[in-house]
Length: 112
Length: 112
Image 1 (tube, each protein chain N blue to C red):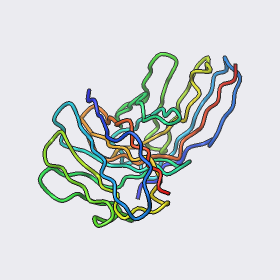
Image 2 (image 1 turned 60 degrees about the vertical axis):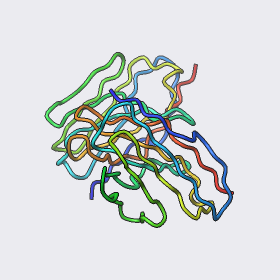
Image 3 (image 1 turned 45 degrees about the vertical axis):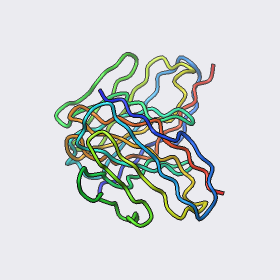
Image 4 (image 1 turned 60 degrees about the horizontal axis):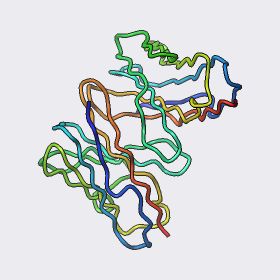
């Protein structure tokens, strides 16, 4: 199994600012992902965080808005840049193993 | 592009009832299918994982079935309890450890 922690657990931010979310895994994993869950909706994949190379973004998400770092096999960060109220969501980190996928507790972001 | 649909969107039942949640997906070329539980304000908890070669998985009062050819899965909850109240998410994976495509979820309320 994999245990995932995220920081911060929640935050309230002003529009136009940026927030960096950290994801730490207790074991080395190859596949790491960032998802967004907007209020009342299901999860949407933002990007796959690749170790040692640029992240792979899904349609509708761009690096300038959601820069991602993956310096090693246990850690990743997601930055939400130039925030607007529409960015208010839960942001979840997950890791994929051959057995299943594990999810972090999420970061609740409210943008005013 | 894979699309996952869950029916019903919401369900309210009295305690003790047996119930079925439905999930359908458009592309049958899946690697696995997972059912997750999400409690308000919390992350995701994996309930059951079915590999594409399997027909069903059971855990306690939960039973999930998979009919890959027809693109359907069901989650059966026996003798429902108020503690089962949560949102249940269905997600399909394309390859081992890969990204997941989620359905919109079924919000279940079990009334005492």
